[in-house]
Amino acid sequence: MDSTQASSRKWFKMPHTFVILMILVFVAAALTYAIPAGKFDRVKDKATGKSLLVTGSYHQVDASPISLVDIPKSVVHGLVDSADVVFFIFIIGGAFQIISSTGTIEAVTGRVARTFASRGKWVIPVFLTLFSVGGFTMGMSTEVMVFVPIGIAIARALGYDALTGTAMISLGASCGFTAGLLNPFNVGLAQAIAQVPIFSGIWLRIILLVCLITVTSIYLMRYAGKVKSNPQQGLVYDLEQQADGQHKVDFSNLPTMQLKHYLTIITVILGFGFLIWGVSKKGWWMEELAALFLTMGVVSGFCSGFGPSQIAREFVKGASAITYGAFIIGIARAIMVVLDHGNVIDTIVNSLSIVVGELPRSIQVLGMYVFQNLMNVFITSGTGMAVTTMPIMVPLSDLLGVTRQTAVFAFQMGDGFTNMILPTSSALMGSLAVSGITYQKWVRFFWPLMAMWLVIGAVFIIVADMIKYS
Image (cartoon, rainbow, N blue to C red; front, side, top):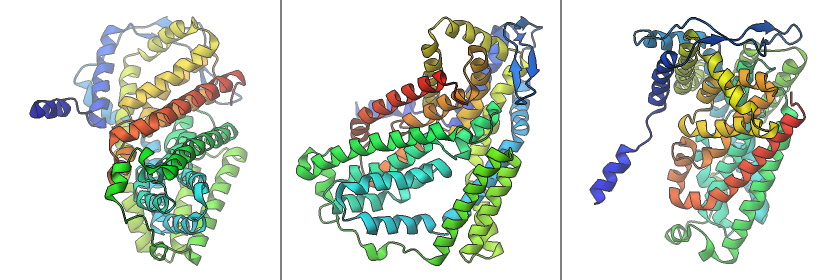
């Protein structure tokens, strides 16, 4: 029986992301035979430069189905079409690796740990806020597992448990990643595809971040309070029994703030200040932003005493680590290449607009939000989901009268909320592996909070639609 269950679990294991995307490429090719080919007329908006669909202009055109021979070429074509985005991602990955290698993140974490380790429950919102910064700037997700042991040690020193320590690190990064204030890997990419100014509309995302951190802090502080008053009420009480005597944190081993760390912080703050100025006042796009991130990384390296060769090595290391995500962008783009060459994208959009158009207005935009949450189950990569779904959601939003910024907003929340419960999420499973918490106990702890997050997201997306968020 055990061997049968084990083989069943192995059989139902989620395929690699590349495999899922290639399956979708083949499905797209099959759709070019099953769906009538059609096109909308398009015009260029002189004020914004956007290419807009002309409502009511849909018409059928000659079919051009994609053969099996054309599929490999479509993958290559997808990579070529995505070259600007792929190299943008490579440069940002390399720049962030230089910044990370300076040890500034570890030093700031150590400083915060010393300052707030004796202040009870307030350590929870402080750490949630701290790691949200990593989430909404450099898209920190899997990297948080490095800091989980520090969070657990501090939580245990305050009378809490490993679940509290793990949550205040990983959920903080998740809140920041979902809000995506200045995250180039999900919001920036989605906005580029939607042809809206990169990092525009930040004010509503800031409000979303505050709401997420507030709700998460209250939820986690209530749980921590129950654990402190009665440890047996904790969901990982058995784990705490095994870890008895390991609850002390040695502050002498935590990194201390040095001049190089302060200089790196100043460089990053100035860099993001220039980013906001350039995007809002000068209309900067990917070329200028990539140059800015590259400069930020190099200057941070010099501030930390790195030589040119060390900066180059760290840059290559960071760019290499992002190769997986870069190829996801290209393969995901192949799906749209197939649908575009088969002239069926506009038919799909037209059909969706007819179905969704029959629904009440608030339900229309919620449908986009639900769709993005469901897609995240299959494509956990934010970059991959942006390239896969936004080319369909953007024209659909135009037809429904939903702003493109709202479509991006639906994407980013759909991309983020469920990451902390999906077993395919490397960020979640990595943190659980480090902490020793079982997936089942994490789900039992997290699902009520995730339900709250999803409701918050639904409210925000309705409000965004009502105010014509732009």
